[in-house]
Image (cartoon, rainbow, N blue to C red; front, top):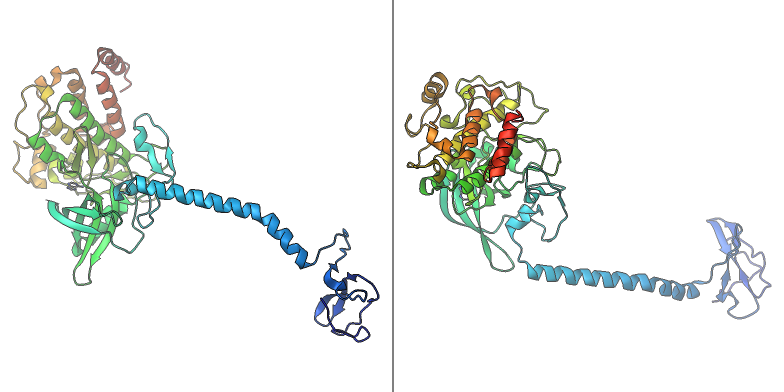
Length: 474
Ligand code: ADE
């Protein structure tokens, strides 16, 4: 390298301090523009090929960039190769997994993968709990239910209507898998524009952290559809071809085992809603359903059900006060209303009151199921609770006469109690529809009773049950 400059003349207002050497030793000089490193040499033509910096503190020298480049290249090569190999292996692993398992919207929602992202494989906590199965503890650390954060709508084709409620219609629909051309059946609950608040409430409950449970209808996403002139609000969930429990009971009898499993699953679902904790032990907001009835329960299989329709469900947020619950008095379906609801004497100061109302309604559902169980002996045609006492859609006044003033409850004949497990179940039902809300069992306690009832299926279990009851533990 050469710079043609007369050494007697200043460069940047600096005179070269020394240039009669064979080596170019850099020296720090103050120039107009700040600190400047400068050197000069005269021996060879390219004597400044090597610039020598003497560090004053430790005396090390830096080589000229022409030598530094190959050194840097050699030292960076191994980590670069390693990074490329790891990326390549990761890419191969991902494409292999995608090919092996066609992605399902439901699976993704169940595994809590945000719906706009197409990445399989997330980490889940998997802990066990005494009352819940391990699968119920399969909850993402982030959120339990999935929301479509994307504004893009899911590729859905409506099939036919499967239900109509107070606020919305439910349709069976095909949800397409964009890549493969396959589809899966889903349920779409369609709210008209005027039922926006019900959609908002139900979506709010579904998207609340840690609601996900095997016995709570699996939520996929919520959407706003249509134009300003015709707006619709959708909630997309799992589809269960067996339909609701009311219709199922009208067509099917239950074996004792099916009754135990199905009723036990409903109780688990309610206990989960009411709980302040997930099966994993993470804190969650307790929820009161407030419209528990057999038509709001879906049959997943002949051993499992799921709660649905959270249109009037209430989040029992501890930060809320009695004032926030002021308009929460008389809601639900009159036939299933607890006496204190019919009387409008709900203790709004205590959030347990809302759970106690649910337990009363749950007792009526359990009674419906027992009334269709082969183990009771002669099984009659299916009837809703109070079916023989009131007409098809009883109003609040009618139910007040029957339940509040007449202290009426569905009949439990002695013949139902010949079966040891059913005997316990009948006692449990009676304790759940007690006139005094405070005297009712909690859903959690009912779930424990189901564990005991399972034990009565074997002789030893039956003896354990008696000893548990005699010890006053339950
Ligand atoms: N009726 C209401 N919701 C439903 C669902 N998710 N699947 C089947 N039938 C239903």
